[in-house]
Image 1 (tube, helix red, strand yellow):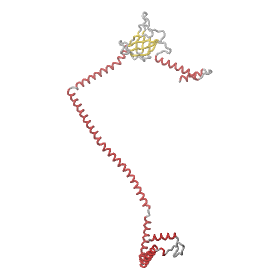
Image 2: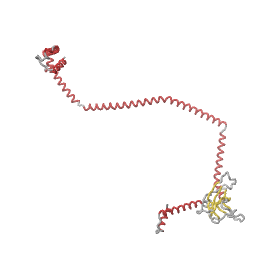
Image 3: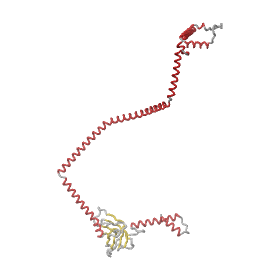
Image 4: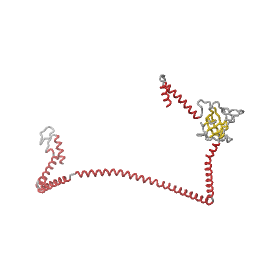
Length: 363
């Protein structure tokens, strides 16, 4: 992206007179970016940009920390790159000097590898590399591209590897000594008495496990027996809770009624009611006093015996008259079917019906 921006700026300032579309400039920038990317990848791999490198192979007993992209030098001058470092399958090689196969390229044009030349892995300042030692012999000629060479490892690398492996070797020896001591201690401990003690301990562990199994079985049976009881208890508790909730509602209603009654009582005018009852009692006492003295109608009825006798006599006569009217109505009321002269008080049929109702009521 940065390359595209730089290219657009340079192209627009350098060639202002030319009319070039943005698509053309973008495509050209993409092509250049791709070419640079390919060049960078090949450079890191040790390949030439345009190819044409001569590839050779070499066997070594060890890689000596050799890695791809390491330098291949001749008389201190870099002439190629290491392409691959592969481990030979241990099941196939028989020569201990052919455990690692290195693929490398020669990028210097016109340079051929003479047969009998030496190739060696040597330590470098920053990384390990391959050093060629040309030893031209006219009778042997030159190697062809793709030939396999036999290489060696510098004594410095061998010494470096031995220096790095020496502490590991010592630690392994110490570890083996410690293991031997542990084995000897176990052998001493594992005599007849120790074995007998261990057998007894294992037997006790077995007995303890058996007891624990029986306890667990008893606990399971107990839980099964008590499960029904617990279920009933929970049901009873649930019913009690439900009843308590219902009773609580009724209690709340009763309390509300008591509060209402209390409020009503508090609002009653007891003093006024007592005063009104006192006045009523006074009036009733006065009425009873007048009645006892013979004053008023009720007093006369209670005190005047003559009036009482006259009222009884009048009532008796009225009752006799009613009975006689019922038995002999023609004495008092006369009807004529043929229009004869009416005797007594004339009445209509409606008045006759009303009179009968009155007589029935009096009876």
